[in-house]
Length: 114
Image 1: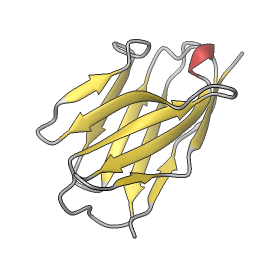
Image 2: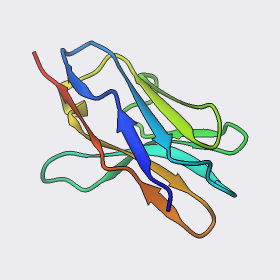
Image 3: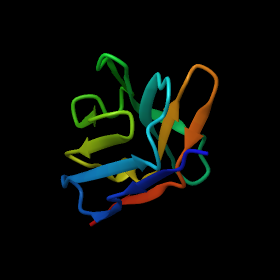
Image 4: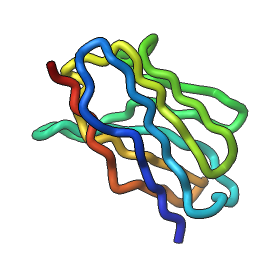
């Protein structure tokens, strides 16, 4: 069973930056994509960014131009978050998928507040 572990969350002031990291417990065979989702209190979980094999990326409109997703192998994915806004406050979840299976991390809290 693959485990995904997020790190890098915390409290930051508006306009600040954070870098989230996600490490898989082992390389994921036949991985198709890795990414980040987020869920704020009382809201549904939503896509933040995905990076597919070949480096193809997709971003939510709300974060495009401010967040950057990257991946260095089949185990680690990162999310650089710049120009953070209070509405970015959420629990951020790491995600990885093969053609048949999705994996989720436990989540890391990001709070943007002055």
